[in-house]
Image 1 (cartoon, rainbow, N blue to C red):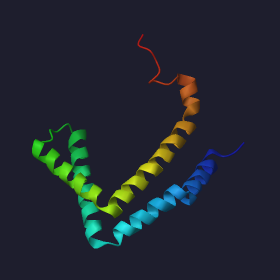
Image 2: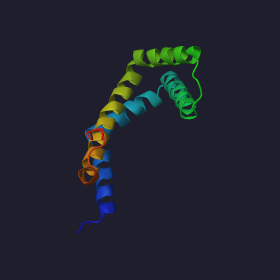
Image 3: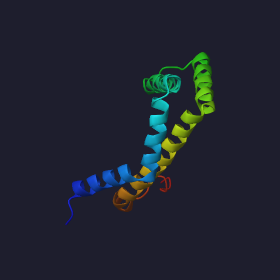
Length: 120
């Protein structure tokens, strides 16, 4: 019987060795080695985190903050290296979501998929 934690570490290693992770790391390093891109990216991440925190605390987000966030997103999307980084991040996230779906399959089979359950 394989140890579940050994399998998890094998999975971690597989992710590290995947093209998706290698491409993400390359894109990340490119942004981090360019001071202006790094600053722009950090600003983008900070803005995102601020808004997420406010949402989680149930605070209202002003039109002004929404507009500022939109401008920050537009700015980073226009930066070739940053938009490449975001694209690679999305690709790896898709892989991780697929893996998550696969490993939670036994629970789904046991309890049923909540999104597929009909209203009683």
